[in-house]
Length: 121
Image (cartoon, rainbow, N blue to C red; front, side, top):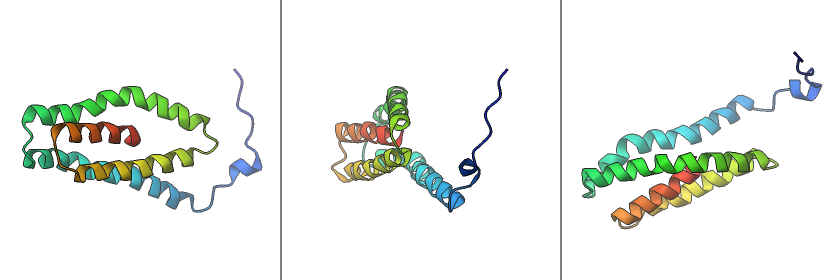
């Protein structure tokens, strides 16, 4: 059984403001989801969607994530800096979220939800 080589001096040094940077990453990941998940079905119901439509709008993105998660993680692994991929996906999430301000038809909300789930992956 082989052991890992020792860490270089550069690897032993923690990046500047590491805790703050990690906290901001987790903040931007989980706060939007924490707001979206409990209130989105209520918003859909208030806009006249029936239970079946709400169920499809909430479930379809989960199936899409099965395909998009491996693709986006492979993209991030090949990127020279994973932070660039994260920033691009965050910007895409912001832009796609604006789609919810359009007229809330079933097709529009489903399309925005599917597109948004790709950037949230």
